[in-house]
Structure formats: structure tokens, C-alpha cells
Amino acid sequence: MCNACIPMLNEARPVDDFANQLIEMLNGGALSLMVSIGHRTGLFDVMDELSLATEGQIASHAGLEKRYVKEWLGAMVSAGIIQYQPEQQYYILPESHAALLCRKSTPDNIAVFAQYIGMLGSVEDKIVDCFRNGGGVGYEHYPRFHDVMAEDSGQTVLGGLDKHILPLIPGIEKRLQEGIRVLDIGCGKALSLIHLAERFPASEFWGYDLSHDALYEGLKVAESKGLKNIFFKTQDLTHFNQSAEAEKFDLVLAFDAIHDQAAPQNVLDGIYKILKPTGQFLMQDIRASSHLEHNLDHPIGTLLYTLSTMHCMTVSLAQNGAGLGTMWGEELAVSMLNQAGFDNISVNQLEHDFQNNFYVMGK
Image (cartoon, rainbow, N blue to C red; front, top):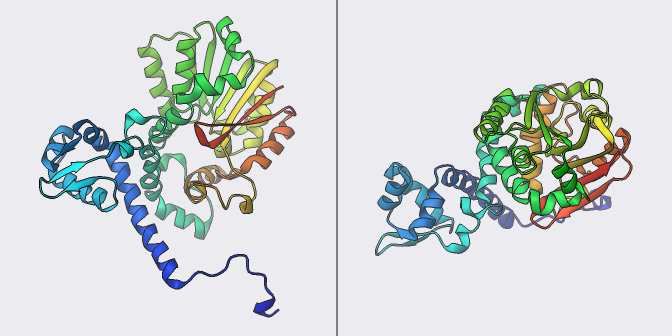
């Protein structure tokens, strides 16, 4: 077939335009690392407190080495994140920028998400090997994963749990006040579960996760708060459909956890089995389509496909799993929920969270 007969899906762009895009890509990738460092070292928070300051004052207040702070400030000024007054050598973090980069800005702190770039970059060699030889990269190769996920969840889940998420389930707060049994699947450090255990002392809360270390961190927090109604279990969910005790829980939660599983259908089947007849299941997962052509206008589509390639898909494949990936999409999610037995599924989108869907269903 001649080239002229092949339909063009995307018209080619001039070389200069594409070259500029690639340069922006390099600057953006570098900036993501610098924003992550600014978050992890507390530099954005310090600069917000100081209003305007010299590099020495910023380094001193942050307790950091001045030489490194100087170079970091150079990157921030070059990117337009921070303003610089050369006469007085003052640096300023504008309020409009601080509103998206400081810890006080939760749930709008974009710097939290910048941490994923450095974390993913640390496994690049292993991912390249997987491209050539197959297989996957296990959770153990992501030492900061649960820390970053806890911050991410603290913004998207914990920050909206009381006001936005729980109200999606009619009557659930009254039932929690009266006393029910709740399970959080893939709970990580269990920040949301701990919050619920504090708020609803008459209810019993369980957290399951594959990571013993993450659960231990959650246990320490729960103990420090004197909570007696929360329990943790290190649990490989691969065969959850076989191990789940029938009709044991009134409410099951799964926050950004199902698509990472080695056997996600087994997990969903097990959740259906473990729910009481009047039980409810709330699943938070990435808001996207299962079809690439419907994700072309997704505001962070490139980031999410990258997260899938370098984390969510590969950790599942490392367990010889399904490898659904981050962008498994709403269509496949609903289909798998139907297969598990759920047929009255409502798909909700919340104003404070543009990246997730919240699926609510009864048994």
C-alpha cells in the first residue's frame, strides 16, 4: 500500500517545534528532581516562612549545606519557581507558588508527587533488563515506596475521607458509630485506617498488606495513640479468594491497591466473599479509560503510563501476576467487579481529586 493511502492519525510537527518539546522535557525532568529535593529537605516550607532571604539564611534555617542550597536555588530561579533580586541577593517563593509546593498546602501540594520521578529513576536499569528479558521488579527494590504512597494517600484519601469519601456510602457513618467490622486491603502504613479507628471507637478495623515493614510503621502509630480497636495482618493476597473467611466484614476498603496485585481478580473475588450480605465495598483507583485513544487528553497521562511501566505493572509481573498496570481503566475495573459478583456499582468522581475514581457497591 502506498504511503499516501495510509490515514495519518497525527500530522507531523516541524522539527524545530519537536526539538523545543524535547528540550522542555529535559528541563521538566530535571525540575521534577529538584522539586522533590525541595520537598524532602523542607526548603519550600522554610522559604515560605522566611518570605525573602539570602541563600545563607535559607540554608541556616533549613539546617542544610549552603553550597547545595545555592545550586538548588539556581535551578529554582531558572525554572521560574523562585524569584531572585540580584541587588540584595534575596530569594522569594511567591505565595501563589507556595500554595502548590508546601506541606501546609495539602491536598494541593504537587511537590509530593514529584518524589515519584526520583524513585522510578532508581530502578531504570532493572526496568531496561525487563524490557529485554521479561519478568518484573519486586517491591523490595523501591525502599521509599511506602513513604511516598503514605504522603500521596494523605492528600488524596486521608485529606478527603471525612468530608468527601465516606459520604459516598449512604448511612455508613451511623453504622461506624454503632460498631461494625472494617477491612482495608493493601493498607500500607494505614493512615486512613488509623484515622477511622480514632473517630469510630465502637468499630473494629483490620489492615492487610504484603509489606511487614509498612504495617509495623502503622502499628507504632496506632500504639502511640492508644488504639485498641485496630489490628494488622501481613497478608499475601494472591489467593485471597481461597483464604477469605466468608461474610466476615461489614465494610471493605481498597485505596489505590487493586491494580498492583499479582492476581487482582482473586482479590476482588475474595472481597465479595468476605463481605456480609449487607456489606459495602469502596474501591479507589486511577481515573482513566482502558483504551489508550480515550486517554490522550488525560492531564497526567504520560506520568501515569510511566508509573505503570516502572512500578505498578512491573511489581505485579515480578510475582508472575496479571500486570494490569496503573491505566487498567474504568471499563476493565467494572468488568472485573461484575465478574466478582458485584452488579450495583456506582462510579464517583470527587472535585478535590482529579486522578481517581471511587467505586461504591454492595453485595
